[in-house]
Image 1 (cartoon, rainbow, N blue to C red):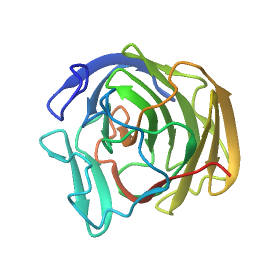
Image 2: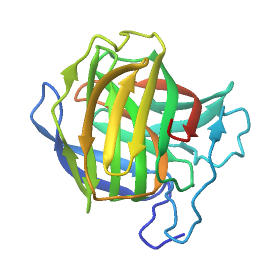
Image 3: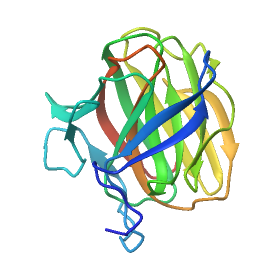
Image 4: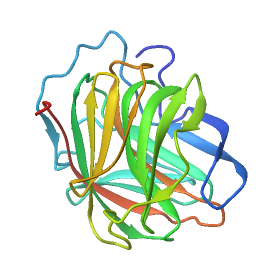
Length: 223
């Protein structure tokens, strides 16, 4: 593993702006990250989480659980103001990243989604939605969490505990974001040309208990 990569025991603390609250200190945990010497993974890549040995890091502590469970990868956050994520331990360039998400319990004021082109625990892109119909995307660069826009609503996002299909098309420096096959936004950035993929869940202030199941993550060739 590259020396900048993190295990589930490595925790970084930083400040970012969250919808409807002021600047907060949030703890981010990275389960794993791709080594820069790792070869680019072949496409298509598909993981339905039926095999607990497929490579995603798991965790079980006082702050959060990350576990394979009944054909899902489940992230349960037990504390407020926490972002928990895990990555696949692979490396991708261009492609179409997709995953099915379903909230199993907890507050509606939450966040859940994907990481992509994760170089290490301090450098990656992120895209997330919430149970009350909002989305946002951005970048973590040199340990600084940046949101390209604040949380914003979109009618494509199914609220409550319904399943949402999240998709990111990675095409060079251009990223296009979809929810349930509907375009919600796009952005261009040249910071990272390749890296790992990951899954994340976010608890807001005074809102622990976010419980999210992820199913059938894939990276397919661009159409």
